[in-house]
Image 1 (spheres, one colour):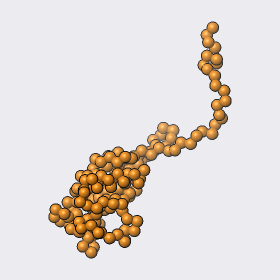
Image 2 (image 1 turned 90 degrees about the horizontal axis):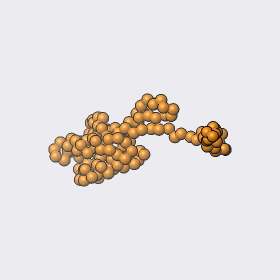
Image 3 (image 1 turned 120 degrees about the vertical axis):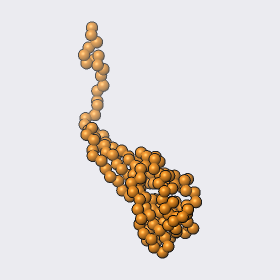
Image 4 (image 1 turned 90 degrees about the vertical axis):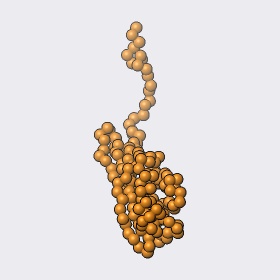
Amino acid sequence: MLLETQADIIARLRARLPGVLVEDFPDKPEDYRLNHPVGAVLVQYGGSRYGKRDEIGLVVQERALRFGCQLVWRALNGERGVLVALELVRRALVGFKPSHSKKLRAVRDMFVSQQGGLWRYVIEFEGDALVVENQEADDGPLLTVVGSFEEEVGNGD
């Protein structure tokens, strides 16, 4: 579910931001090297918050899935700067519905760092999903005899 939702977000951003590199957040972020002339959007699952259990005989909970988009950009300002890109990412994802959650909403965006001529900002989104327990089969006795209601009470004759 998480990988599919992340893939949906990446596909949406690639369609909406065709001149930008959009990919999964790297396994080794300390080794990440920006090779794109403008910038990159790196998408990462950031965790979940779970709601209270509904009391209906089984566990059912709301789950707020959080995804972050880290923008790694060569320029801060101007038409090709990270601040414009941040707004484009927000517009592309607010209201977008991935396959395994409700529509995404923006949670926050913030400056991360500036180092070696690269500006880093992050914008986070949440989408709600429903968690339902995997109910196991009851270990009660097996049904061995099947009769009809008429057999039990008679047919009224």
